[in-house]
Length: 126
Ligand SMILES: [Zn+2]
Image (cartoon, rainbow, N blue to C red):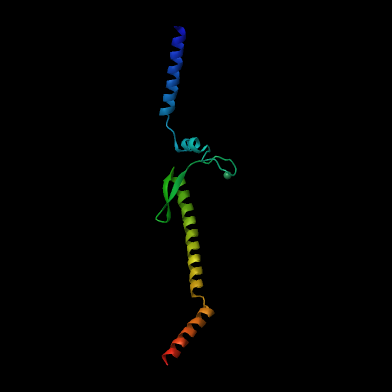
């Protein structure tokens, strides 16, 4: 009888532990560790653990602050967004200029071909 009670207690204990595990709130970090086996806040280069301060997302092609822990984090993220956005603008402008130059660069072969075409048309009209 004593053994049966002990067994019951062990089972009850196990069920309680499982229940505790189930109702324990699991955050994004814990879920990532469980699913992928690696800590998303640990730097893959140096192993330092980062602190989550906020997040910026891409909205309609522009980085936008989505969430920040506090005013300081908000300021920092917005400043970083401004820097990244201006770099992106500079890159896009450079690329557009390069394309325009390439498009309007005088092409001697093409010009010669066009002149020959026109000449041929004139001859056939005579
Ligand atoms: Zn690092």
